[in-house]
Amino acid sequence: MRRRRARAALASLAVLVPLALGSGCASLEGLKSDGRAREVKAPLALWPEYSPAPPNREDNPAALKPVPGVPRIPGGDMAAADPLTVLDADLAAEGRPPPDPKTVRRPFLYDLTDSGKPDLITVVDLDRRTSELRVYSVRDQVVTRVLFVRGVLAGVELAAGHLAVRQPTEDPRYVSVTDYVWNGDSMGLWDLTLDEARKPTAAPGAGTRTAGSRRTGAPSAAVRPSPPGGGP
Image (tube, rainbow, N blue to C red):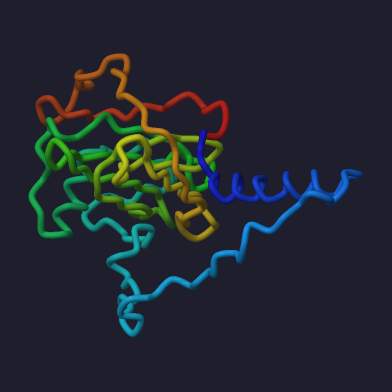
């Protein structure tokens, strides 16, 4: 279960309980002062005159980026596109070579943009730790990247119409969970929480690739997952 300011809530309860007991019919006799309360000081900010520059468009993971070199899709359904063709074209636009087929995870189709048509969710593993999550949709018949996240992916989940990205924290017991949801224009950041870390589990058919790919061992056909049953 995600932790939302748990410490603050417990601290509030710790204050409220003694106050509630003291407000009853008990006599105030016998109470004594433990001395002067410790003075509370504001945190001392180091280098307060420095602040990071605002993010540019390239730093925005939800910036809409049409993918050049991919045929238009009049029906607006990403199921009509070859996932590898889309990935190759997107990386080529960045000046990068096509990904090794063995590093491309099985893609998924799911409507994240409330268009009534499925979008394409892909992950390319750069190495044994770092991965790239790329989500594509059809905007005005043009294949468009609507989300890009590079980092250590502890998990990616579909829940209640949004995409939850789980990433490790400095504490191995917890992960940060970033929820992205379509706001009508882009995949906006909906929520940021902490959750307990989970042990990885092998999915059915893990390690296999869909047959019929134009590149040996690569997943050419995307999977349509069953509708999630609830929130994360």
